[in-house]
Length: 135
Image (cartoon, rainbow, N blue to C red; front, side):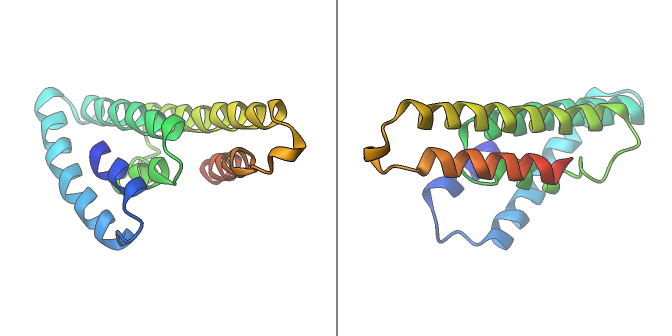
């Protein structure tokens, strides 16, 4: 799933709906393996949430797009608020997005006004906006 989302960074003509469909298919297989590992529904949900939260947090720190949000949405973690682990996973992604925003804003502070490169500032603003969507 992560490779599929990372590929989105390089392919601008990849349709979001097509990507979402491919993700859901990959998610079904991954969820099946979590069901095998867990002995109760709550344990399965916990394993799933932790796995998705970890992957989405890594994407939030490295991806320049909304890949982490797409992963959370396709996985169903955003809809599954019955368990504490889902909320923890979402919060972990929020913190990763805020951390990324801080790092990108700091890059901008270290550059001179004549550089004219505001891409790090735009990434910082996008990261904060994405974090606020999750909250």
